[in-house]
Length: 261
Length: 284
Image 1 (cartoon, one colour):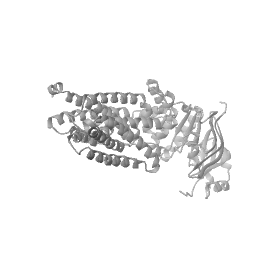
Image 2 (image 1 turned 120 degrees about the vertical axis):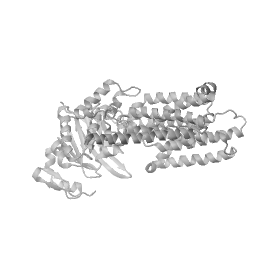
Image 3 (image 1 turned 90 degrees about the vertical axis):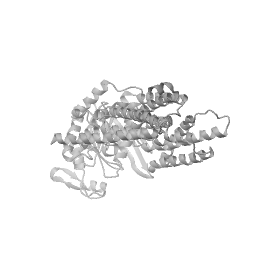
Image 4 (image 1 turned 180 degrees about the vertical axis):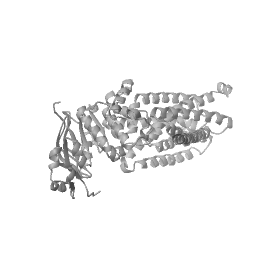
């Protein structure tokens, strides 16, 4: 697949209550990549995602999606979004898994049109990809955190997006399912050619799965291949995080030890 | 009952209006409950009272205003209150729920003043507060029919948008759904349905007809569509049983409708318990 720029940010800045949360970000995201977006707490990772999705408007700079400005951009079905599960939904909500997955088709179907049988089949197909088909008619609240997160990925996949954006999707998913989760993402990236952009705290695991890493703290400090990121020196990381980050070199992973939060 | 139903127009009006609101109040109620907006229904019903009071006062004081149906003024106030709540929610960004007590107490406060100016509390007012089987005019019945039809049509047309907005506002926004516009449309529908329902169930109990059937349905239903279906079935049962017993016992229908809805709620909670126990036994 030929690589092309699908997301382009130029000098993007955003402030919240007079404080810059995102400052002068320049970013080029190429199709086919699996990008991990890492950085300390409050480094503006989630805000950057919200800026790309048009959920918040930048104070400065410009954002292009698939070559169009955010304002012109209408093809929202091209972009799947999986947010931090915990905040975004009420777990007592009376809906089945398939009803939730079908909401991923709302932008594709358009106004004044209804869900039909074809949409149901698309939803079942997306559930098959995340191996949740057997739960299609279960109540969403009865599933475990990891299963719910798979359902939300199916919801994002159902409109056949070429870009999938995930905001800390492993929060609330138990450790033993996190590996399976990364395997699923790897499969989506390699087999279906979906570009992935994933915000995460887990700087250790992400470098083992993602092809590229973006490391930011208000502005982008590193953007390159995962292999290069592993070479990124401890000193650089400490400077970035503002406190000591111990690198456990025996398994080639960085582990953040001192949490300031 | 059937004989009197065929004989008296007022009974037909009350029954048909009751059947209509038995569909439409729980239908909107489902969205209200899952979006945690239950108290908005209360605020809007109280400001509807202000509209009724204003209409009664005008009728007393202004001779030109003789045959006004208070339901219209109630609707105007209710819709106005709905828009005001939305504005207030923006003023108090971090305390959005403050909008509700502001509108609720404001509605009652102004309402009480207007009622006193209109010569106080009479039977007319009592029937607005707790509902009545005799007070629904043919004219009101037609108005409610029109509103019911419009609301059902809009809910069908915007079902997927309303659903996605209720489930996950952020996702709705990423799906290109204009959340603000849909929400405004929704809240205006709620305001109209509240004003429509008040003649049968009464202002103080309107919100019960929107929330109690949903509270029962949510215990049992698995899917959202099932929740809607069961809510309407429970709402309709409450209205019909309530109206018939109200007629025979000569008590306001608001009371009997709400008591029926509460009984259904208790049954649904017990049903869920029994089912859970059976399930545990089955596992063991």
